[in-house]
Amino acid sequence: MQRFEYFQFVPASLDVVWDFFSSPANLSKITPPEMGFLITSPEQPEMYAGMFITYKVSPAPGIKLDWVTEITEINHRKFFIDEQRRGPYNIWHHEHHFKEVEGGVEMHDILYYDVPFGFIGSIANMVFVRNKVKQIFAFREKRIEELFPSGK
Image (cartoon, rainbow, N blue to C red; front, side, top):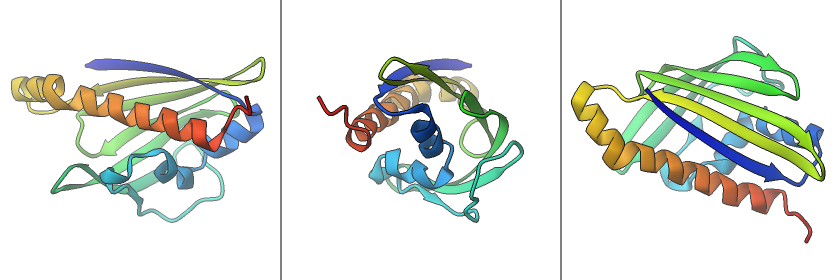
């Protein structure tokens, strides 16, 4: 099992940040375009515990996958958790935490994941998967800075 943590400051109110990140429709805005990310489930006005979200995603050129996540827990304006129900990982558990701080919001992501295929999967994680996860979060950081400029 792999663990990945990520922190980012967003210079906006907690309400604005929560509204943006708790809307599945905004996922494509913060996902690298080369991943071909497309939500295929009907749009919902508000996220709720038990909600399933279906996607098409291309983690590498020529590979297209169906991915299903469930929102398993929500504490409004504090955190939500999504877990893969079908997709490329044995386990995908992603916690999204939001904390109001001076001048904005501190986001804290905690991701646990496990790659399938045993030893071969472990090698794939070392060579490709972990770096891809880091690249996705780096892209997200840049996009969030563009979407929520600090005004400095």
